[in-house]
Image 1: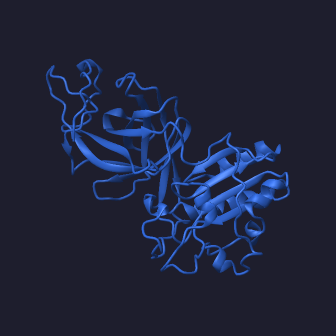
Image 2: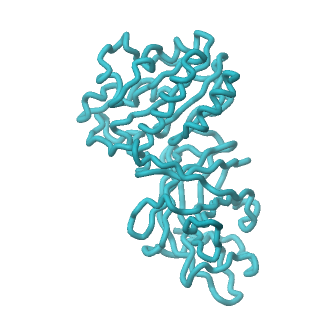
Image 3: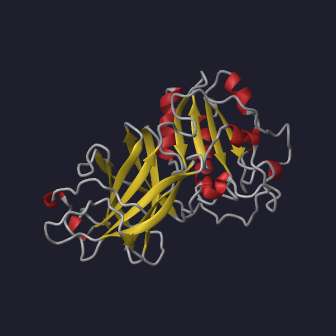
Length: 349
């Protein structure tokens, strides 16, 4: 791998050493058509003790003993507002929900040493809502949904705004949770991320795509219409195109609870159900199963609506106003508080 040639920062600008050893640097790149953000590796950053210069974002060598490994769950990061979601594993491979994580963003093309923004992430627990994905096979080989990262019992989320595309740096400062954030007990992990100029999925402000989607009129057997083990029949009454034409707000979720590699589909769908039940008089709601044939796990085929929306991962939740304009879009996880707040703001109560 070719190492960056940027000049080294002044030693005084380097972060304090948290422990003898190293910082970890993760490199995220886009593959193929740029649809997926994938993890390439965890690298050792070995700072010299003297005045010798070594760029803090330089890749040196693999570090197999890093105490924490954040893994970004997003597959679609682009210019504008984003909602980053990630897990943190320890050296034993366990998902750690008991951490305080500060996330700082760096515009590497402008100043790799001064953060544009720094804020703390929130952990969302999915322990009671996240079944392991059912063993399955996709009829046409590798599928988009196969690229979703395994999440486990929960996920950290943090808002992030990128004013431009290109390579950005994300600095994770990770410490045991406590009454206060003790930087002396923290580890620093650096993440280089390719930010797209144009997002793959629709974003807030875009017109929703008026695509057909299957309903109970097309398939009266819910087991053939959704992989949700506890389906809400009301989410399968309308097709997307019909819902957008009726002049009511719409809550739309693309998810596959039984086959979700990220294990965020069931929690996201359950949040949609709960919020819609309280606001069914104000807006419509639709669940689109990612697969056309959820009853055939040995040969799954992605649904036409999922492909038409060009979604690079699952689940996705969209809140759409009465004019058919997307007002909020969530990739992966979404909390009841977040979605309920957006819905109540949209419908005026």
